[in-house]
Image (cartoon, rainbow, N blue to C red; front, side, top):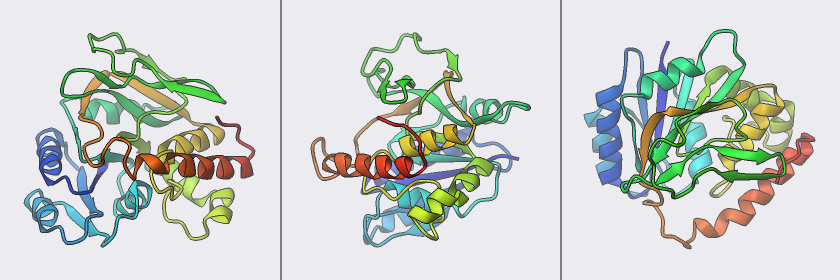
Length: 257
C-alpha cells in the first residue's frame, strides 16, 4: 500500500506550501495528503490544499497538534501514517522510510528519520536513554552524517515527522486504558495542549510490544519552532502535557520519565 500523510498548519502558509511541494515531489503511488488547519479564517491553507489535491480539515480554533493529528489520521486507509509539522520537508528518502517500517517479520511500530534545520544542525538524532531518563541525541550539532545509523532501541522519535503503522495506531487508539482515560478518542495521541503526545504514543507502542526505529539513513528537514515563539504559549504547555502523559502511562503501568 502506501502512506497517508497528515500535515498540521498553524499560521505558517509559506512553510505549508513548501511541505506540500516536497510531498508532491517525493510521493509514490497510493499516497494521500491531508492538511489539518488549526488557524481561524485561513483561506491560504485551504487553497494550498486544493492546489495539491489534498483533503482539507479545518478547526476554527487551535485544538493542539495531538487532536489535529488524530483527526487527520482518521481520514486515511493506507497501512502507514506520517504525521508532520508544516515546517518540515520530505526528501527522496520518503519511500525508504515507508519500506523499512513495513519490513516483513519485524515488530516495528514507529519510525523517525534523521532531521536537520536550515543550517544543517541536528533537530532529530533519535531519542534514547532509560525508561525514566530519555534525551535527544546530538541536538543542535552540525550534521556530518554521525547519526546515519539504524537503531531499533529508540525510546521515541521526533513528532515533527512521525511514521506509524496504521494497525499500531488503531490498536493503541482502541486500547482499553486509552478508551478509559479518553472515552471515544479517535486517535492514538493523547490530547495534550502541546508536546509529549508523540512521546506518550511511543511509550505506549513499546508497552504493546512494538519497536521504535530511528532511521538515520533518511535525512529530512525540520526548520523547527516556526509556528510558535520560543518561550511562548506553546512552550508553556510543556509541564501540563508531561503531567498528562505521566497520568495516562501510569494508569497503564508503563514507567516513564
